Image 1 (tube, rainbow, N blue to C red):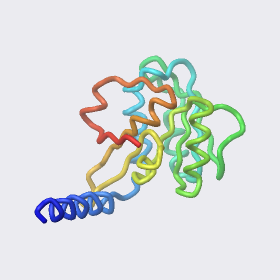
Image 2: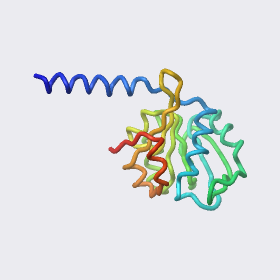
Image 3: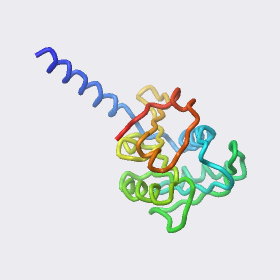
Image 4: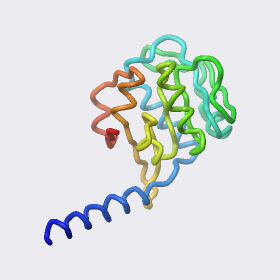
Length: 166
């Protein structure tokens, strides 16, 4: 009986933790993206970002075009309502309805998938940001999809991100 009650308490904690996560607003999503890209050892040369489902996030990210991040330069940012037909090094999913196609795209092109919707990290998007009820930023890293996408991270990311495996 004790283990059953413990299991229920754990489940309630996990559910309440997940429900306490909200999408990161465009400015926080863009700022966090740029900061965490510095921890990705896989990005080199000219890096293009494609944002699916949120022009405001794309506009915030465009402010960084031309900036150098370790071995990479943000070469361009585009957006649309569906995955692009050509290769982008980073694909940002801001639409729950497009998560499956973004995940497939990222796996096919070995592109880093990012989202401002924390729940999507649990379904296979690699890097996600959100805020909790106290408006504190949350960072999530899906280790399984990160491996599928061929990402190599500086170990420092483990200090700031909650990790997920699925």
